[in-house]
Amino acid sequence: MKVHIEVPISKIMATELITLRKADGLDKAEHLFKKHRIRHIPVVDGKKIVGMLSMNDLLRISFADGAYREEENVSSSIYEMFTIPQLMRSSLTTVAPDNSIKEVAKIFVKSEYHSLPVVKGDELVGIVTTTDLINYLLEDS
Image (cartoon, rainbow, N blue to C red; front, side, top):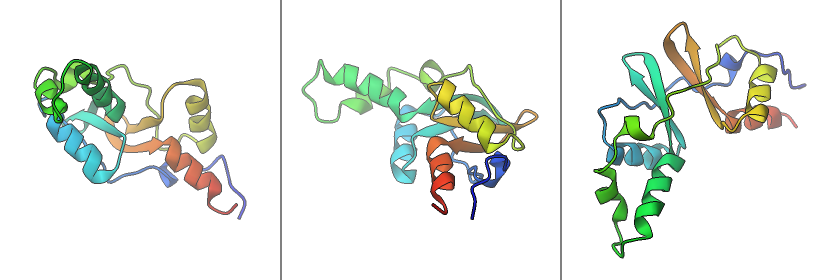
């Protein structure tokens, strides 16, 4: 099968979404990252996306804290010092379900992003990652 780069992103995006709310704790975020083996979690208010939290956001504060403490479980104490709104990226690039794989690939190439929220109007309907894109491209290679 030939890979079609004009296929809409809705064909490869994840639709069973793991999300966080602004009021959730960072310990919950870490739990979700580990449980679901994901690296990005959309932060929502109802069905509207308001930010994106990455595993790297958590690692950044955990690493900084670890440089000054001897404790094995440093992250739980540092997580109490920060909130999701303080760490999440709130200025987001989003794509629509009908954007093509080619359009999304261009965004990934030109940006530092590894995931993009997929929105229809104001509603979060999916998430697409560089891994989704690579898996699609390798599907029948």
